Length: 162
Image 1: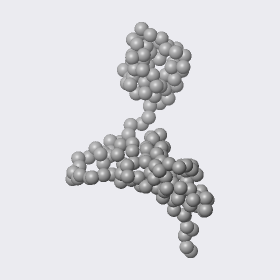
Image 2: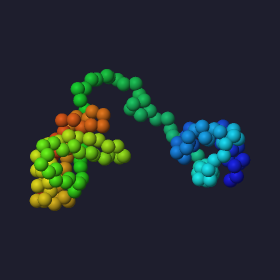
Image 3: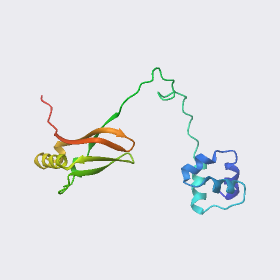
Image 4: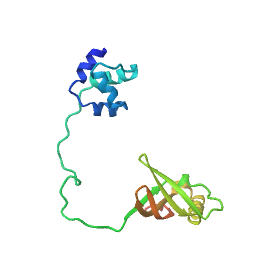
């Protein structure tokens, strides 16, 4: 597609959605639509590809639990968090008394401060039974991106009795 065809196809469309899909600033797309700017070949190719694909069918307007009006409002002191960790990722903490862990979950990083003694116990369990036969769990209170009052434990996976 040439620039004029793309420019006319963009008129009347939501540029914020296209800008998010292309990782391009909205003012650059607006300037292109109004004819006062040129786009890089990579952006032109991306726009042509996006405009060539048919739009996704509309999603039915099904209210999610957060869109509904709550029936009750309750207060909580804390939100408890339990995470299953990769047992092979634990390394020797050395002579430290506390260890700060960085836990990656679906692109987000959470941090937890745990006792080095519990990490050493987990490593001993993994060394004895193997990483494939051990599950590592961390529990604590979730506070933003931090797991406070965290504790870590390694449990041996037992086969189910028949």
